[in-house]
Amino acid sequence: MKKLILWILWVVIDIAKPASGDLAHGPAVTAVCLGGVMKRGDTVVDNADSAEGKFQGHYKFELLDRFVFEVLNADAFFHVTAPHNYVASDRLKKYIATSDRVRAFQLDNRSHPLAFAERLRRGHRNKTFLPYLVQGRSPGSPFKNQYLNEQWAECVHAVRAAEQTRGFEYTYVAFARIDLAWQAYHPSLQMLEATKCENSTTVWAVAEDDYGGVMDKYFIMERPGAAIIESFADVLNSFDKLEAVYRIVRAQTSVSASLPWNYERFLLHTLRAAGRCIRYMVPVVGHRRLSVAFGDILHEGGTWEVTPADPYLKMGWCGYLPKYCCGGRRVDFGGDLSCLYNLWRSHGRCRRHRALVQVPRSPGEPALPPGYGLKPKETAEFKLSRSERCVLRTFQLRACCQQPHVHLTLRPSKQTIQKWSMSPDDVDPEIASTHESRWHCLFEDPNWIADNRKKPWNLIGAAHCYDLHLL
Image 1 (cartoon, rainbow, N blue to C red):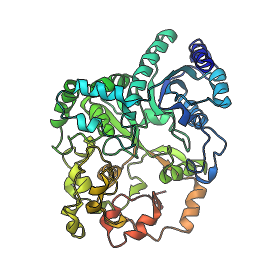
Image 2 (image 1 turned 180 degrees about the vertical axis):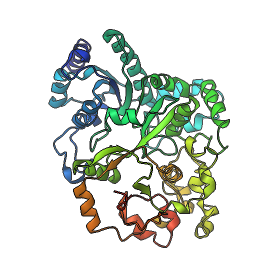
Image 3 (image 1 turned 30 degrees about the vertical axis):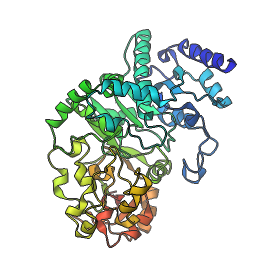
Image 4 (image 1 turned 120 degrees about the horizontal axis):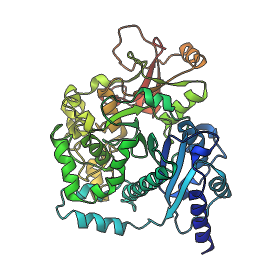
């Protein structure tokens, strides 16, 4: 009971704080909506979250403040879940009590999936979309996307209330999970302004972990776009509303590209149906090797930059992707599912597995090893070796089809470029070029290259490669 009273006190204190426009850093132009499980954000960064422990001793919420809130001149709105066994750290208590950026701190106890399942089933008497909505990649918590969507919807309500108090709207609204470890600084407001779309509301997404849609762990948009996120959970809970979205999607792309698949794809299709324009940035958030590598470029003196007309950052081995995969606005809507799984159509070595390589039986399965998510009895017949999956990671499809694949990129420092030039890669990423090029490539898994030298179709988009000639 004492803990509950303390949490409520924090909420009241934060709402009673002066509007950020009265503070030294000037009027906040960005609202950041934070959702997820607070316990996972109130943890110390370890080697699994950051290479060589360079942020060891820092909490994830502190990295958010340093790398996101400060850069975006943001107010933070926490709408998060507190598990029953969670005890807040002293660092978090001090941060909430003293930070002039925290405008709201609201806790809920969304922890049981039954309520979410009931809402979905009640709104989907027609079960066309239901199998894709009740699946989940995390065993035991298939509805975590939906409670995050509901938290973000509540956050937009709080943002609107804050705007009424301060008398004017925010320029941008960002949506983030509290448990993400940021590796380096977010692109600046000037970078966002320089890459805005001319005739439609812009959404900036991270070019990673899109699972055939758009990464839903973090994205930022112009203020008018926030209404979509405010209603997104309700749209997913209703067959009629979701079908209205897909009528628009089906009219604009191929049959396979308009198929639902998972929550990331539902988000992308909802944004596209509303006419939103999506820009992409290289990843510096999360614990994947690529995010850490790009973060290191910034820490070594690199800078964010609008991607030039002749981009120096390109994707490797994209020439093995069938050309039809990139046509007909397929990639704008997440890509043709047959392109993600049926690469045996173009690459003979995979043909002997043609019965095994297919759109997954279980709706919403990401591009992971065949057999993932299946019952133990079904797994054996789908078992392929690591180098014979004959599938394509979803992000690689969009990145190969849309060159340049990002609108906001990272230019390495002169010292970094000099270091790379002294020992360029001996791997040929097979990128077409009008000049003799030397490359420095960043890999999610360096061993993947060695395992697939004789199976280059498995290397499609396997590396982000810097053209040293253009730097």
